[in-house]
Length: 134
Image (cartoon, rainbow, N blue to C red):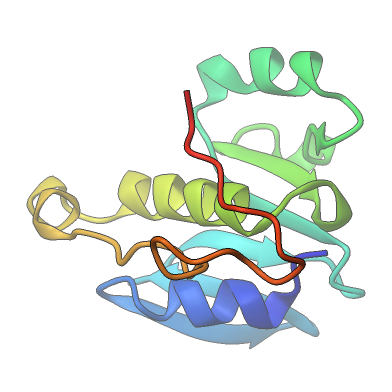
């Protein structure tokens, strides 16, 4: 399961990101705009996402994604269950949410570091050779 600490480690590498604690909830900002927020217990992550694509995302995988509360439907926002995502998907969701709130020139100038994985040419723990995507 992805944790708040995993998200923190990645989000704080994104330019202009700051972290805050509001009402017991961890939130990540650019300026005054929140782009990622967590439930009190850390099991659900809210993130910036285009309103016009929300129904497609939630409808396609309702066991993973959820609509925000009725009062948050006016925002570009979606929720995800932390147990349902891996590190790679978390990084994609956070990066896309961040790109929605920073100036375009900042987003275009930023190149994320690749996600950590086994060194190239070496088998990961467990002795199975690494597979290349097809």
